[in-house]
Length: 331
Ligand SMILES: [Ca+2]
Image (cartoon, rainbow, N blue to C red; front, top):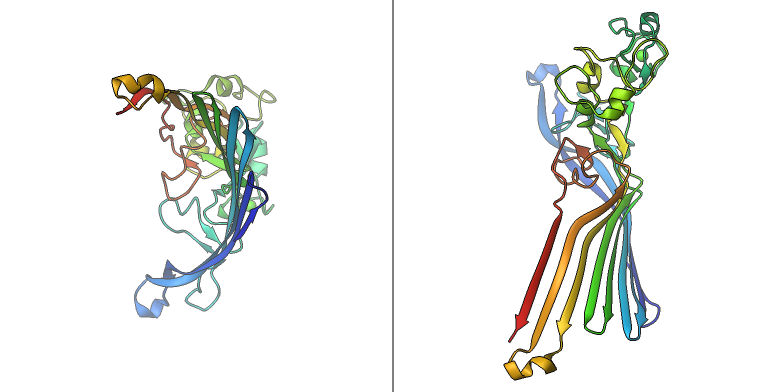
């Protein structure tokens, strides 16, 4: 940790960490001769690396006072080791916990990323589907990338589709005072992360069971050359992108949110002395009222800390907007 006090008005702290966690609890496959399939063992290793900055400043100190605290955090995980197979060869891929088949652990990559098929458009003809290795699909169905180019679409064509770890997250807290007024503003946000908006699969499905978005309806496939983004309306619409992890769920999850704004007024005690009140404060505050984001779901932040996988939005409730006002009296 580094701590630097530049002046009385500027303080700066920085933390860098690199931590290796070993002995993850994993299912280890046993040799068939034991008669058991697998057993839980402490194996594997994950690395956590990151830094935190905090800048505390007194920007203005006159009649108007303005002080702020700016924080930045950055963290990267990396799977280093997942143990060994029964035959002694190192394990490179493992499905762990809920959603493990969609968010597996892969040696050399960051933890729990969406792993599946890349959707590269919509088949314009039946022949195109056959040629790409998906003979059961027809014109107007989603086209998956044949990653290994072997002419067959199967599990080997899955790739890592997301970057759920932000480049950085930040907080910017401000307090401004003028005479008896005070105003505080807290901004929070993240930059450079994806959100897996699984809920989107319902918003772009036109099979008669869900309500598609207007944008999806307008971009639907209606015949050869009409659209390369949304499949054709039918009872099978969206079936291939609902059950298989795919790139259509991945969206930019960067956001800036005004977490809290509070305006207060303090009545000076001199005026109140005669009625034996030392101070009165009235205030009004609003939480989560403004969010800047391109994310199409309810809340780019809501998917955090709801599941074991940060950034997996399964239609969770957005963070609550609220307005509060009050009077505080000190006797
Ligand atoms: Ca293939």
